[in-house]
Length: 567
Ligand code: ARG
Image 1: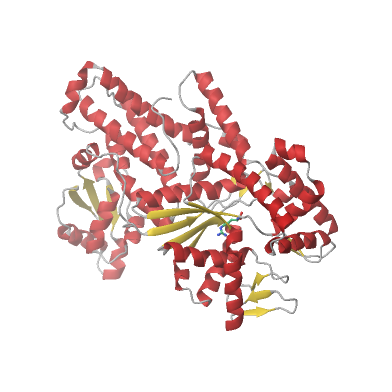
Image 2: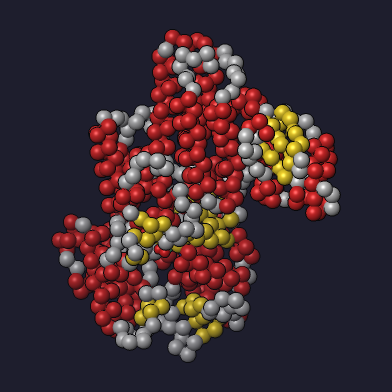
């Protein structure tokens, strides 16, 4: 509803829609209208008194079916929305409610999740996975053709480290029993050896130590792998296969899918070719030790090839971006990772531009804050991890207990996974999130299960009505004198398409999560104050309940959260 007023005003005043949106107020009581627009800002621009501007505007604005009347209150324009009109619209809505055609079928590649082979998926990976999945759904719903890519970290120094450790310390029985745990043990053991070697003042660049005996061993393994050494290759393949199985278990539990899963290693050659091209063109330079780097006007220089001429993370990203553009001719490609990779992506985009790839303008990095637990940051190197699989399992167990305790129905997996997804998605991506077991296992208030429950409650009303004899009445509905709770609910429901659009434009699923909560609250207030079955307004209210069901279902779908008919 608000959007209609914004759109209308935008045609008659010289302000941007975003500016108008910020200015619109909700009057202190409904007798003063549903929305108010203060004319002070325009007064400066047009050098007229605000009251005069308000009067002038009120005369100019056309009559529309959505707006019942516009009143002038001093410098304010008060808008009275035609609620009956909106009520009519809302009870007619169908299961596609909120779907938009903003994208007109344009291709959007979304690169998300991308865990590293050999390391377990921990709670730090959850944000990229569920944010990416939600962005996929939001784009699909808005009429784009999204393509989800899981770019596995199947190569890189961590792989070199793991291969060294695998050859030295592998416990075969342990690997059989729990491959993910054994690989983590190997990795942590390697890192502790590496760390004890670090001398005073020696710098740590990412995970690379210069002149460290252990790091050098890992570099050598990586070199062997690139050269196609059989034995090294075989170990690598084993590690990949164990890891992928572990990842797939998590994706299945979370109901997350990809259109393409490709390892970084696939792009080493393409990336290196581009790096050598850059060297030829003078875009890149060579260090005396052989390493190749690129300099920028406004960013720190970036090494694009190691001194032993193996490809690094950025080398592969250069190759991957070019190959993907060739394959998909995308209109946009979104990379979803932690903010700590912001510089990496800025450098990547500029390198592609320098290389003459104009599609670099279509690349976007969506960064998000860290997941902290306690006061510490997750560090796989030290074995300080909370495994994603454990988090999911525990939450599902807890859901099972709650179902038993309350003697209710519901699917523990859907509830548990919904709880986890919501507890992360409700936070603005830019913010850090503190993970606590207590928080993510809390099913009251602003939580996934609360939202799912509001859907189940609405479904139960519909079921009861179908059983009751009054069913025939529900065909003919009259829109009654609306109560304030009905009006609030109608207003909230009608916001949904605008909310989807905003979330898509801002690449921010938390907008949908927060909306879902407000919508459920609005429904619960309606439920507690308006009788549905057996009331004179039954037919209309049933339609309203149904409209709510569709809206909350679609809204939760965009977050990757499923609903249940009974709970
Ligand atoms: N594997 C990386 C990580 O764990 C994420 C990959 C992101 N995608 C990319 N094209 N670089 O941080």
